[in-house]
Image (cartoon, rainbow, N blue to C red; front, side, top):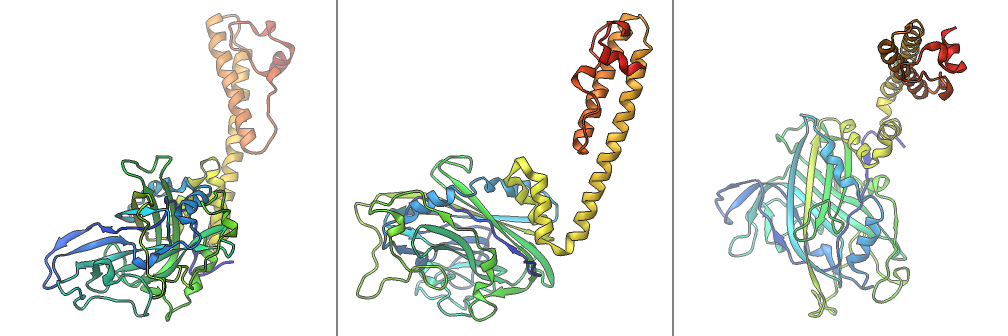
Length: 424
């Protein structure tokens, strides 16, 4: 269960239905290029043409939307909780249109020097993957990486054999240098936040969903491709299957057919079946894909953001994740838990003693009504604090409701028998 290179994936991506028209967005700082037109340095997200394929089952990405939105739609707020000064975050976006006839199957996020294609449409000494047919970034997308990138990652959507479920996993990773400062010989964690936004909407909208996953304890440089490392090395980190709850226009999703390639994408149509973009009658919907990459010095800090997904059990979730996923931190976690329990015991004994002192002060107040009012209030609050400390320490309440000192100017002799018993 434990791996030196810890990879923990929580994924849920939502998008409304099918075929895309790319509209790449520039990012980073613009610089002049010796050839190939203008270039710019920074992070970009691209949707290679192979990531948009004709949906044989007519399910379309609308069903992916229903599936994944049922999963973890609240994780989009998690990265906002990461405020450590040694973290570095960059965001890229791409606008596109999508129809119900196509499946959205993958996307690529990369950081490097980007350049537009020259007039002849051929890259000039640009970077390309070591493996052929990786489908990472190609000239078909209208731009290319002009030199060795700092980071390239491809993420695909897998479908179950019966087409009733989907899951998300990264299938290609080249991490040459740290994103922040281009260093090597470091260990870093990466966290990705992905959001699909309708026009005029932000992540708080019911129509938009954010998701995220983390890759921890990565030694820079590192890479996992078809020829270096195991392409399935992410398998233990892929998301859980999400069941479909929506019907497609052509029937139940479970009866639909469709095969994925080894990297999770549907094969391109053959020459005998020309590629189709979208039926003229198909409704096209505009969307914006936002991807934020956060680079951290310690994978443990990346894991902390997961606690924000389930606010009701934030501390418990964080503790369990660290115990299960970071073996090297086991002693540290157990020590922290012991210290926490010790502090609870100290608080319990302290508040217990303070309650006794406050009660004794009330018992000897005498007949001064103003002092009786003040001292009775102090005693009651001390009793309640003692009960709260007992509950936190896993102990029984020290005072029953009948034994709580009433806040009043009533003399001790006129109090109930249960309260007067405290003064004995």
